[in-house]
Amino acid sequence: MDYKIIISLISVALVFVGYGPYIRDIFRRKTTPHTFTFLVWGIASSITWALQVHGGAGVGAWITFAVSAVCIFIFFLCLKYGEKSITISDVVFLILALFSLFLWLVVKQPVLSVILVVLTDILGFGPTVRKSWNKPHSETLFTWWVAAFRHTLGIIALEKFNLFTLLYPVAWSAANVIFCLILIVRRRQVKQDF
Image (cartoon, rainbow, N blue to C red; front, side):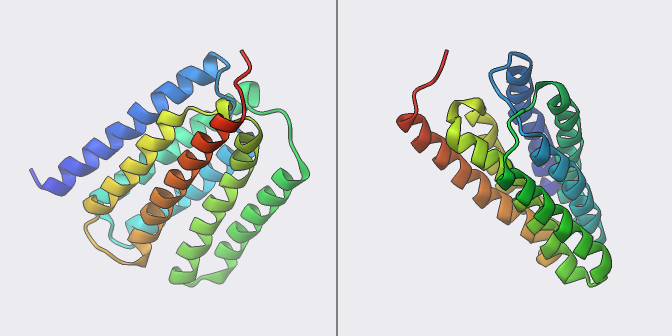
């Protein structure tokens, strides 16, 4: 079996290993995902998956497909269990994310398209980062560490290395590490409510 297939299968398994505790914590009401984030991620990661397939990512695109499916599932959980406090900045991030998604639809240039879709995804993270800055214990830290590791492995699983295939996993490896560091620092500054 090709090593890229093995790495891709491990990375797909890590999607479920990482999000398993996250989903469990949602049901326990320990984690409160932000609805806007998972709405944007469900849409944008599905499009990113399609762009990766178009760019020749091969088995490396399996990871993005699995993430898309999980994000869509969590979005539906958000409707009942998600963050209910919506701020103006959350709405701004949602509008910017949807606007960049709209630009992607009208641009029709593959390179700019992949940049816009990844930008959409990153902007979709804004409401979760804002919420977590104020409530750093409302996220499952383990999930984000696994995500950073998974995206890094995903880079190795790519069959072709180009902007289409690399931008998404590189951006998300960095974004997840930064988010983990924010959670760690803020958890030291803000006591947990029990």
